[in-house]
Length: 329
Image (cartoon, rainbow, N blue to C red):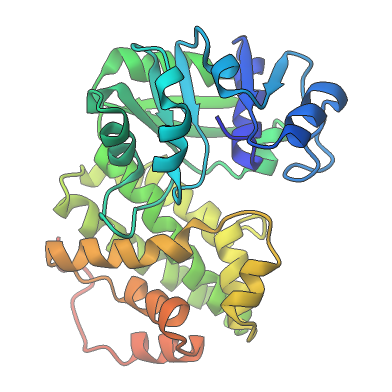
């Protein structure tokens, strides 16, 4: 459900894993292009889609008889989307969240919004997260990810559904940790992009990634996640890919901010969502509620939502009081 870059790439992998797969696009033109031309040039230019990937703009048709429903829409507006077509989801279908964000108003992760919107068992929602840049997955380059749910049967069903020859899927019961990793890495990637845009070097990038990981672990453990999860694909793996790759939307936004562009101009020029921009405030809210220090996240919020200069973020981080490397865990 969702024909953006990651939704389309995920659909490709499901077909390659041997699953009959239908993709729902909100716009008739996108669904028609996928069905007729086997392309989605708005979101995945220069990628040929497999013949087995069906497409429709009719949600009832897309959801009919589905046993796995993949939610690949932006975190902003997910409640309205589910209100529009959630009633068509079969009653025992496994729900897969590819959404890496936190609702600003309620401070809920995407899986919690899905649970509340559909009034369903929370373990029915499987969270998929990892170092999965959509373009590379669509090009069938080797990659791996994590499917997380305390319900082992549902996690294994998702593992089976998308484990293509080039895409390895691991299961993990720690849905909280996996979801925290997927959301926080976008915020850290904004900071990493800013550092790169301002011309700082590899040492700076390594420091931002490492200290960003520390923030991720502190928040994740405080919310009930397993510290070991953050040493895996959904933690440090996704963090490294998102912070270092020019294909990453969040890093790209940060880089352009670091070069002096306004956030409004950057967002207006993109046809895809950088989840970290909006969810940064919610993540900071969660940290404050849990009593967790997240200075990088705090700086990103100041730049993106209070108009601070990115240079002030670096200066503020460097002037923080001296501390042990491991604290607050």
